[in-house]
Length: 70
Image 1: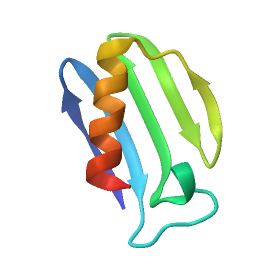
Image 2: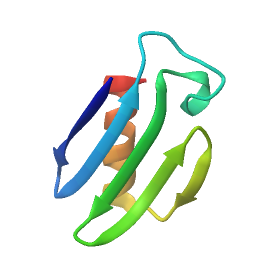
Image 3: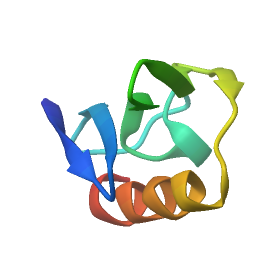
Image 4: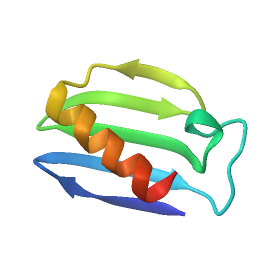
């Protein structure tokens, strides 16, 4: 299941499942997550971490998304 939205000025796209898996973030339900601000992609996880360039506000968005979806 895909979800997308904005939070605190950051855009995100998340793919999550009903149950966790070895491919999910921390073994959780989120298998894909992308966070960007403006034209800069700051975080990407696609069944494994590709890159993480989040600032403090972006990290807060990330933590909130994991609470909701993971």
